[in-house]
View 1 (tube, rainbow, N blue to C red):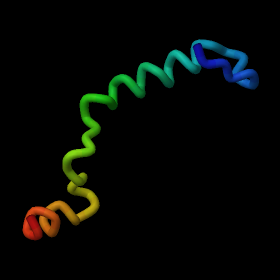
View 2 (cartoon, one colour):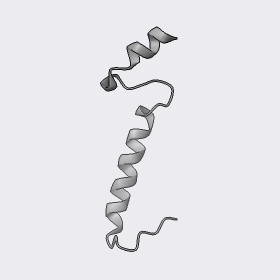
View 3 (tube, rainbow, N blue to C red):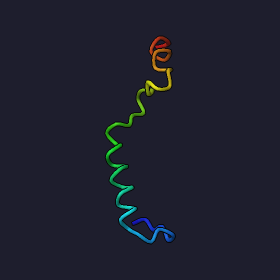
Length: 46
């Protein structure tokens, strides 16, 4: 359990957790995001 004393409305934390879970399958540590413009450079160096 996580307690955030200044957050009085628990539903806001539930919304945050739902958003975090929705992002999880789209996050990766194995490849760079295209928006950084570095993926091609990293592929070329490999």
